[in-house]
Length: 398
Image (cartoon, rainbow, N blue to C red):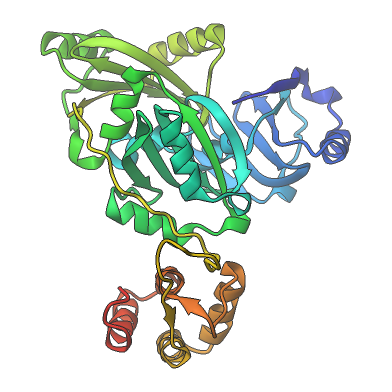
C-alpha cells in the first residue's frame, strides 16, 4: 500500500535523478520512481535506499525488466512521480501476475488491509504467527515473499487456514512443499492482510480446478455483465488494456467488489480507481474476459506446518530426527555426479544460504535441501535420476 507521495507529475526536464538517488539513500526509502512518457512508462524500484530493479512498460502493457543501472531519464516530454511504499507493493510490480485461471489468488497480492507490514521471517516463528492468526480470528491471508518474488499465500477464515497457494501455481500439499523449499528466513518476508467476506470467499476458492474461462467473445462490458446476471453466476470479469486490469467479482450475478490494478499496483484512491476504471473500459484495444468460479461454500480447515530452516534446539513437542552424516555424504556425491563439476560449489552455496550444517542435518532440513538441489539440475531426466538415487539412500525422505 502506498504510504506517501514524495512528489507527483514533475516535469522530467527539471528532474535531477542524482539528487533523487541521494535522497532515497539518505532516508533509506522503500518505494518507486515512475516516469511516464508518451511511448512508455519507466519504473525504478528502491529497497531501503538502494535501487534494485528497473522496469519498462510499453503502451500495450508489455513489460521489460532490466538492471537498475540501465535506468535513464530521457530527453523527451514526460512526468515523474516518486512514491514511498512497502516491499510487498514492489514485488507486485515485479511479479505482474494477472491471469486468474493460471495464478488464482496470487493475482490479488498484495490487495487487502495490511495488519502486519512486511517483516523479515528471520525475526519470526511462522507457526506461532499462525496461532496468533487463529486467536485473532483472522479473515484474510498471510503472504510470504522475497525482494523479488512471491512464493506463497495462506488464506485464513475465522482464524483457521483454509487454502494455501504456492508461487508456482500449486495448491494445498504441493504448495506447502513449494513454500518450504523456498523459505529462507534471512531472505524472506511475511505480511498479513484482512479481507472483506465477499472477497475472502474468492481468495480461498481461486485454484485452477475451480476457475473456468468462458469463451464468448464479448465486445462490450455490458454483454459480459448481462451473461453473469442472467445465469446468476459466481464469476470474475476481467477488463484489461495498456497495463491496467480491472477485476469485477460477482456473487450470484451481483457485483460485490471491483479491484483496479495499474502496472501491478493496486489502486486504493477512489477517484483514481474511477478514472482508471472508465479508461480501461473504453480503450479501443482492451479485452474482456469472463471466468466462472466454483465458490467453496464451507471451506475446511487445513493442517499447515511451515518448516523453518533453523535447527529446533528445544523441541519438547516432537523428536527431531538427525540424518547420519554418511547418508548426507552419499546424497552429496549423487548430486555432484548428476550435475557435474559445479556440483560441489552449488552444494556448499545452498548449505551456506540455508545455514545448514552437513554434519548435523535434520530430516526436514534435508527435505528442503533436496528440493532446492533438484532445481539446480537443468535436465529433467538427470533430476529424476538424482531423486531416484536419493530414494535408494533414504527411502522415506521424499
